[in-house]
Amino acid sequence: MINKECEHDNQRAGAGRSGDMKLSRRLLLGTAPATGWDQPEGIGRVPARLPRVVRLSVLDLIPVRTGQTTSQALQASVALARTAEAAGYHRYWVAEHHNMPAVASTNPPVLIALLASATERIRVGSGGVMLPNHAPLVVAEQFSLLESAFPSRIDLGIGRAPGSDPVTNWALRHGGGGTEGIVEEFPTHVANLIMMMSPEGVGLALQDRTYDLHATPKATSIPTLWLLGSSDYSARLAAEQGLPYVFAHHFAGEGTAQMLQLYRDNFKPSELLDAPRTFLTANASVAETTEEAERLALPQLVQMAGLRTGRPLSPQLTVEAAETDDYLRTQALLIEQMRGKWVIGDPGIAAKKLIALAEEFGVDEVMVNPVAGAYEDTPADAAPAREQTLRLLAEAVD
Image 1 (cartoon, rainbow, N blue to C red):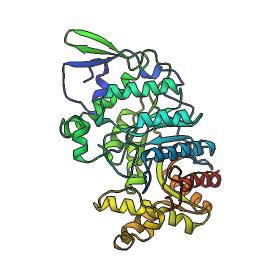
Image 2 (cartoon, one colour; image 1 turned 60 degrees about the vertical axis):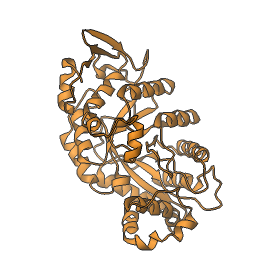
Image 3 (tube, rainbow, N blue to C red; image 1 turned 90 degrees about the vertical axis):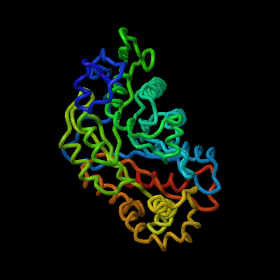
Image 4 (cartoon, one colour; image 1 turned 120 degrees about the vertical axis):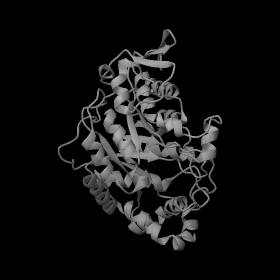
């Protein structure tokens, strides 16, 4: 729990449970170097009108398809990150999911180190780290080290969802039970995490002594922090704490306008951010023809339909297998509803859809989840259709 020196943060975020250990901040976070909290990417500055060119970024869940190993899926994502950088994408985020046969993105800090090492310029980050799964100090240490290794390139997106099933949640917490208490303390953990990453560190009050606590010995810049979510809880918390906010439009598909408006209407300027800052996430499959783009989207559409209807998870199907899957018939309405919310088409159609989304929700950046699948003869260590989606979309939007 934060002591009186940071009492205003605790009140704004929502009080956590009391304990014997307290953190005190010795540095106003707004005094951190300009190369840390406020990168030259527009944080804190919302354009008066949408620019003609929408900034593009990437969300990668590192999908694992039939006949593909984890190693091969990672190789494909490294190539995808390099493609994104070459095409001019601004940032590349990886997710946190556990014990899922079709997703290799289990450990964002490790993946960020891998992808940042394989690229030179593009920002790399988490979309996101599920904070209830981790001690805030551990996350602060991991991302402070990443920022030290790759200065001014690291984003820390955090969420409160478990990212897994109840049994896996139990295993993640060493058999410590559910998430109820942890989730209740989420606002306090967010505030503590921010303090821990400050270059001057924090004071840890334990009994009658105060101990110095540093996420890393000598920080010169700090990761940019984003709050992620798909509910009004995350929108309100981001607004209350004055943090950048991303709504999971690619997953939720509903309520985006309401959540973004809730965030903007309730935003309180903070030492980190002086105005609301947000962007949009969207699923995309782009090919030379709309017919081909629609075929390539089928594996992900079938997989998402299965996820929403309780079908046992499996590695992602190939395009050929998805075309004959019974879900195309039994879940036709659900699949058609999802298809209508995704960016699917040839470059011209896809660009128009993406720009229309940006205009509808008043954002100047769209983070694309490239969902184009693979054919049976696609090399296992490559994802050419996902790379094609990024290249064609960037060319068409520019």
